[in-house]
Length: 211
Image 1 (tube, rainbow, N blue to C red):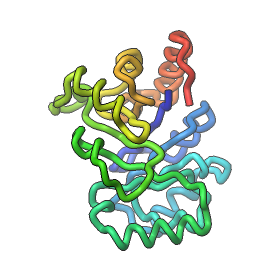
Image 2 (image 1 turned 90 degrees about the vertical axis):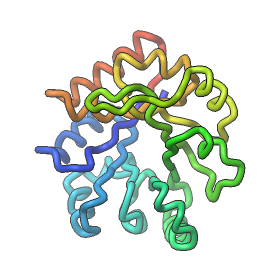
Image 3 (image 1 turned 135 degrees about the vertical axis):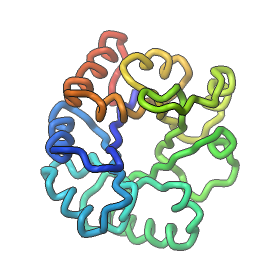
Image 4 (image 1 turned 180 degrees about the vertical axis):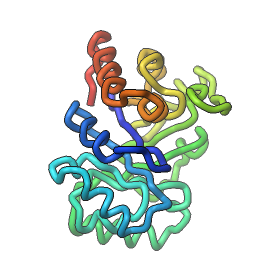
């Protein structure tokens, strides 16, 4: 099961240090989502993280930085997918430098996830919200039956996002997801690294291999 942590879109105290500690604890994939930062500020933020962990970062914006930084992947939002030529051109330039870079995306409904014609072969995609939010009022709009059916037909690996945490591990696996995103479970915790370790330990106790 993929355990992915996604950043807060707003600043967090000692955030780069926490991210580094998560990598040291074994986190393999971190999605960096800071749309409000300038390209320069984003580059400076990444520079606060040790170079050996840059290849575990998937970038949600300022994708051109992947041409000079050895990142794990780039994440395409719905907006990126609409900018057909600009996005395609950016990806082609990145792939000339990093042919194996991951391309990921997000879906907010099953229809988009099962769309026959897609611009790219995504390595995995987020689907949300799967569970009722841990910290806000939005609720999942999916049923178990619709999820299981859709996931069996999906072309790429689908990662559960929204309300996911230590208490949803078994349900995420039962539904057929390839993994889950940790967001509120990490950033609303008093000790983010400890919370991540608890999730990994719970997976191990359930004989679930963590990626």
